[in-house]
Image (tube, rainbow, N blue to C red; front, side, top):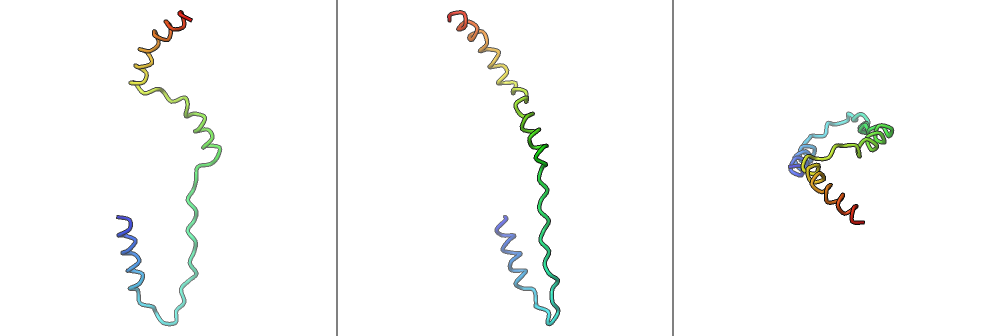
Length: 75
């Protein structure tokens, strides 16, 4: 899809008739996309490990716990 639209845009640009004499206003650079503030990013990173385990994983952990306990006893 993207390439098709780009090609369409390019052909449209080519088909525009050049108006005689009038000079186009200087092109303005697009404003840079706003990025998340570094502090917010750091906070998000810190908060990431605290996400709760997915239910399936939680169930698996519960099942495995007694096995771990038994292994500890054998040690």
